[in-house]
Length: 445
Ligand code: FAD
Ligand code: NAI
Image 1 (cartoon, rainbow, N blue to C red):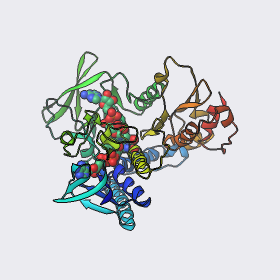
Image 2: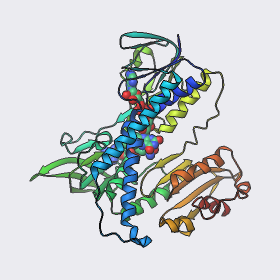
Image 3: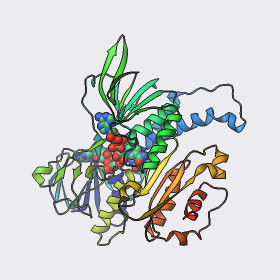
Image 4: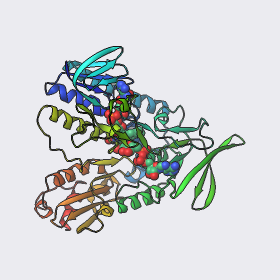
């Protein structure tokens, strides 16, 4: 009898399997497609390799600012693709090595849950005390006329492009839409971003998304909000995305349409109704310990529909393992840091200002342009914004600017430990570093 069977080897599944085994549990991990799940194969890692290619191209274009003159440079798309594939495969091998070293049983196959103590895979029944469903999510596709043209793709297809498009229309200005739009913009692609709601990156703090829109537009993106894709048409061998924008119909010539309109939970062909596991369109319902409506069956990560982030999936799993071990990890799931890898980067943790309407709070901002290191880097766009409650405790932090993805973790720590901001003013930040923006912003309270 196993202690734990995990279905799905994405960052939720594989990290949890490793963590469980390291803590003495007898665990089986089952994967039907590729170890690493969405994150490694179609998400975080391949997109971030492309992000760093785009960043290198951007830096090349800015070289003259640093007094370096180059006549011309070429971009080799084959090398870019190869590098991406190598990094993905190296990362998968790292996971496989850990799995092997720890002696975790990894089974390739599609799992079915027969009962809370029985899992069926490849015709064999595995008996187990507990089950974790970590089956992830899939892209949501919207129906429209022309959706079957071969220029219409989602975020999984875009990563296996044979040639890089010259003109792209991105539908949906959420995280995937904004990352892809700003990345391809640096690959000399003319990008149009179309968003249904009145602002891009809807869940972010209002000041951040406003600034992001201005900076994205300044870098050459065309952005249409309160707009919808009506159809894709072909005329004289050219394709056009027909967009309804604020009462007008626009025809935008394009050779690629990227659908980035959100992701839906993937239930992995599991017979949830038969098992009595409750779910809705957002995902499998879980309690604060990630247990489903059926005792002994847990669900973690994207399949729960709560914050579809790789690190969230992993920590959901850690929480389950700690429960199984009779301990309790005090993870604060209201403080999950998130990053948009756009140009510039955006990060946030905690609440936004718009979520605090009707409560007592104070905010401060500090601009990157006054930071010496940012000026040395030639990356002066952006600001940090902090929100404190009536007890002077940090409850929200939002950054747009250089190294936002790294800076956010200091703020997560302050927030988690509930350190009073006046006490935190005693903490020294080294000079000259970008992290001084944190110290300076706190000093302004
Ligand atoms: P998944 O990674 O989706 O893994 C689920 C696994 O379960 C899959 O491998 C699937 O094959 C397997 N499976 C399903 N059913 C069965 C079954 N019945 N039997 C066996 N196996 C099964 N998040 C970040 O935090 N940072 C980022 O930078 C980031 N970038 C992203 C970029 C893109 C383009 C996309 C699409 C996503 C990105 N994400 C990012 C989100 C991140 O990829 C997901 O949040 C994360 O992969 C969720 O992990 P998971 O383990 O819940 O599911
Ligand atoms: P999303 O929910 O972030 O954004 C989808 C956007 O599409 C929304 O702004 C929505 O209003 C818009 N939209 C929906 N239908 C539309 C329509 N018909 N026309 C125009 N706009 C429409 O979803 P996204 O970007 O697909 O990402 C999915 C998940 O993947 C996110 O929840 C995110 O957490 C995760 N992810 C995380 C990343 C990171 O951490 N850096 C990177 C990429 C994805």
